[in-house]
Length: 254
Image (cartoon, rainbow, N blue to C red; front, side):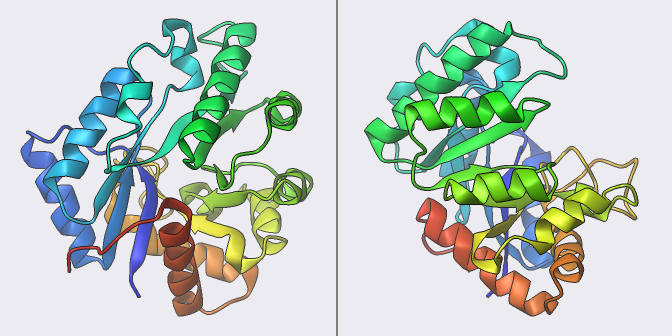
């Protein structure tokens, strides 16, 4: 087994940087990457990256920040074989870059797309737990559903797990202030845990202040292993098996 970065944001396919990042990840034992769309245009770019590299897949979705721009053109991407999920989508009440009512409507529409196309759903939620669960309960939770960059505590983890979701942990799990998040990891069964970088954001300790990159997934995984009281190689094997199952990932190309 090798590591999987189940949520990252890679540069465009025609840039030297993306080659550097993918090669570095492979050298670090990260052999599967899922690069994530946040707008319709960004989703198209993510698809181009996935088409270029073996072991890279993409998602297509509209982030709550961009919900005000609508979903025109999104559904046509969902039939592409390299697109493995709808998202990231959800609610973000921290910044409110889109009106909250619009965020809820666009989130619900993407849940419906996940149901219609039989695709996993990737959720971004920030300071909006109650409404996130309410929309999911009303629309029906797609199977599977992933809470990416999970930031809640044990109560939010339990609520998500009761709805059948997977929880994905990022570099935040390494932050000294993240005791509640580590407690959330501790109540999450290993078969429901995923790991991610969310790169280029949220570099884990001791890499804070630098751009994050997929090669740092093992640092996140080691912190998750400590939080859940398991060996690192167990977390490596389980989180990759979980990602392969959730997204239907094929061979990594190694």
